[in-house]
Image 1 (cartoon, helix red, strand yellow):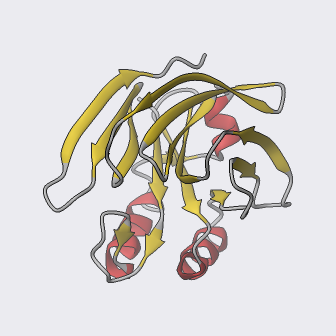
Image 2 (tube, rainbow, N blue to C red; image 1 turned 90 degrees about the vertical axis):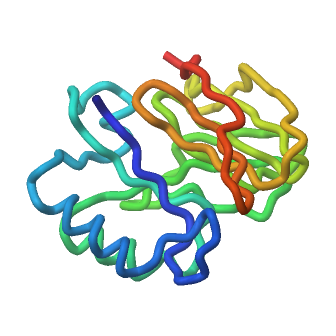
Length: 182
């Protein structure tokens, strides 16, 4: 099974999108142990990685992620960064090695979370709307949209399933569905 490890914020704040620096160091130890093959997201999405591979992504481009990104690059792991562009309604997929824009996605409202999935992306906006977009010729086309009524949603990819979790004080699974992008 392939997987995408998605990080947002490397800090000790304890929020649903935070990973403590010590925990990230433990993850990095596992990623470099040889127990798993780590490949660039491009390879994973295009099927060039085969099976049993992992890609690492960072959502939002928080400044506190820079040390973690540098550590990954130092050991030869090329993460993908989904950076907030500051443009309402635009999600941009950027390759960190050369800054090339791989795809953009225009939506009606500003995404506060965007998670890569094979052949696409899932976003959550400030109103709690969950959108699924599929990659088509360097553009992302919206294929599904649903309003959750929740403002603290976190999107995860587990195997071929997309899981949307309400990230409040008592996290609950809000929705689980198959990735529609092929």
